[in-house]
Length: 481
Image (cartoon, rainbow, N blue to C red; front, side, top):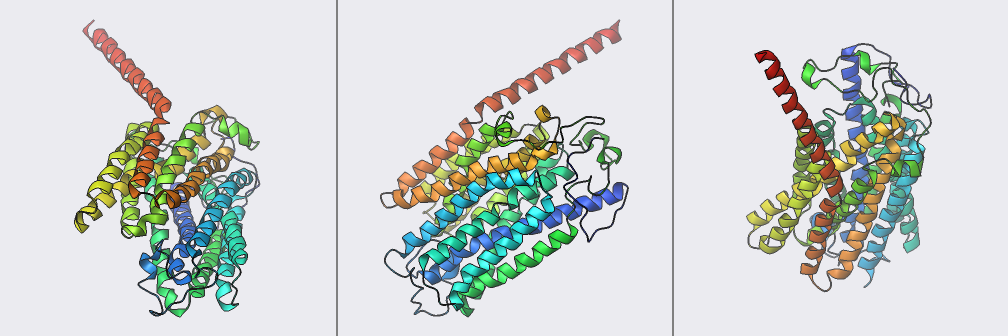
């Protein structure tokens, strides 16, 4: 079997080499656990600022649902410079700056990830994020009230955060073939919601000791997790001297694991270029689809406390990600699945806006459904689709395109994640109905952008079914003769 990438990756110092099907399953389980832990920590630290906002600016409503339950006292005067009349604006600028740097950094991180040891890239990203998140919180003990101190450290934290997603998707993609990738990654992608929820709970529970602790403790946890990743994460079967083509993982022959590389196939060892990755069929449509999908998802993430806790949206998103992954595996149709979910998200948003205020139970049900349809394709595109396209047949299954393609898709989506909340801040001052009109239009556009790919998948299925009918007819005629 040809090697999927060069010898830039090395065996983690904490692991021993084992052979056989059982060893492969153990390595795959370890990869899922460690990458799940890593990205849970990324989202845990990312969520802190939205919880602490209520402590920095008592007047802010964004992200305050958890924070108001855990403030130290009812006389909280906030933290300068955020406790002024423009405090919400300053906090909003920090959010936008973080997302802007994160989305730009994503493109460079993916390019770097295909050229370096992913274990090292991920470790640096985790420890770097921990350091600069802690430095943001250090402003509490150092009594710092300079806006640019907080802005700069949050931007640097965003830069380190950008290394996480391309790295974890590339590592998981190296270990799992396409046949069940959607379901596996759909379940695995629950780390996003678990990170959001755990980050909210941990940061909120620490507010009573002072808001600096809400940054310090999660940062320590993330740094420790980064060390675990460094010592134990195997980035690919090649690093562990395993040939997955020779190992039977699934006892069901009809659903046997599809390897990333065909047996005996020669691949290009050179890492793919940025512009070359954009030209891979499907990358641009899925990237633009994710732009509008994340615009909707992050608008809810940052503005949802105006309505109800974001937890329901996250829980619905977990189910949506699993369903989208499972359905796309069963149908072998990523574009059809993603587009269908986005088309369903449009009426779900309309129903939530129209009927969500009628009762708490109805609000909860509609919020759950909306989260499922919005986050389902978001999870599918950022995981299984990115991994599929990163080993596209046009590059002979070259897995050294994984991080670059993942970065392009999620980086483009992150631009939408930055624009959505920013636009909402302006539009909501005029009308919340206008905000929901924007979100419904974005969801519809996300689905329409996949039209060409949906048609291609439908043509492929019709052609395949037609071939089967002809083959069956020929077999019947032969039997009769």
